[in-house]
Length: 92
Image (cartoon, rainbow, N blue to C red; front, side):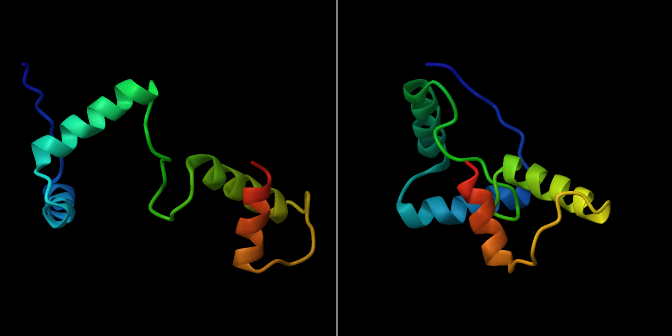
């Protein structure tokens, strides 16, 4: 057995603990579970999302499209936010 130390901000720890308590899992058990899943999947076992709920790739695409639109490049008909997200998801 070995020890792993992790530095995390208090707010994230508190919010995660609240969720884990609701699931009946302690912090140590959750971290062990996560590390086992990394080994099994040979990578991060979940989709990574930003604060906006998008993948990092989607955010880059939106920022690039926004920059191009400001320059008048690749401009198409106006879309609702939902239509824009559906369009970006269709590109994957």
